[in-house]
Image (cartoon, rainbow, N blue to C red; front, side, top):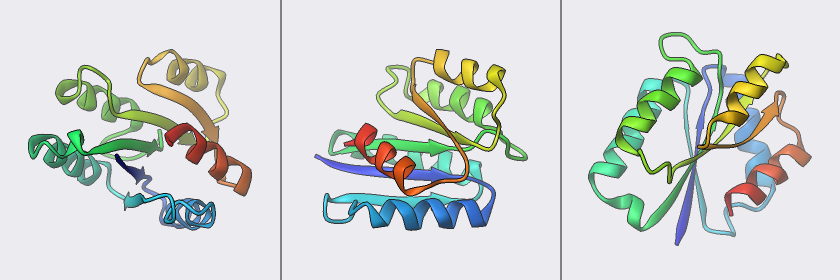
Length: 134
């Protein structure tokens, strides 16, 4: 089964860095598709379309999600995701610059969230993401 990792971050530099480091982990040879969005609403719309088209049966969807974003933050994104994926099959890694114990604890108590990674993305963190998602 193919895996799609969806990167969602409003910071274009962080998004580019994450994508480049994930690509260097050899995700492409593992048949992992990387898709990125700098607007969380667009990422959510992409996921919803995949769910509606029943493409989630043929593809594992994974999300690398920032917390602090305008219009729709990471917590609101998770709430929206719960509406059309109540079984929590779509897994999430929170990826934020926040080192707040409150944010980390809140993320890790959500049963959809596999781990919390503090920005910036680094090679070892990229490997951690890939190992969680494959």
